[in-house]
Image (cartoon, rainbow, N blue to C red; front, side, top):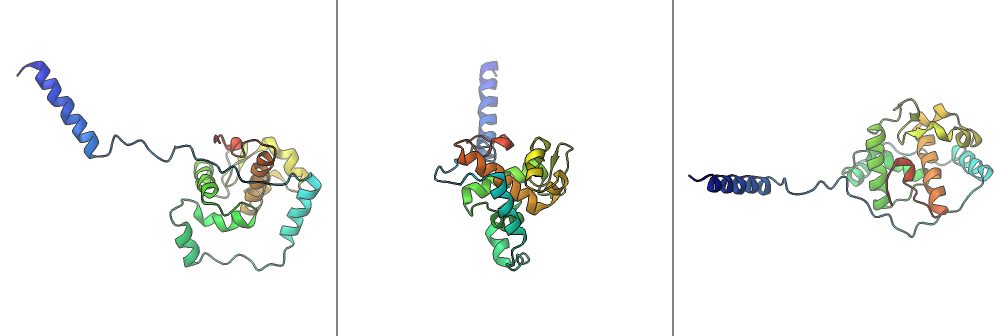
Length: 177
């Protein structure tokens, strides 16, 4: 057999295997997500933000129910979907595009573990210590960022504040808009 025919047969066999086993399809998990441009949020002063947080903490609303079948079914396709009801209660919109990105960030940053601590970053969304002054202005400590409620609320304030200023809200987590 001539070497060229052998190489051609080898290349065709390899190509056939790649196509047959799906190796030619790029992964979709790292694909950029389109963030809708219709989100609008108000810019709040630190005093207004603290007042909202106090109101949320003092709320007499009934506690969130334990995970129900409906919640499990609705968020079953997400790695960190168990945290979505809490995230929504802390201000995150019930928007599939935003929740998908939120899920990717929680999984990448903490593997959905609320007590995740990498030193300079804490909690589900791995809030960085660079925000300590703002966290303190809001009445929290940096250790409070290990509390999922405080962590998701602060992450929402960080995201929504940037969006309100016309910036990409996902930038603190190195996600492009």
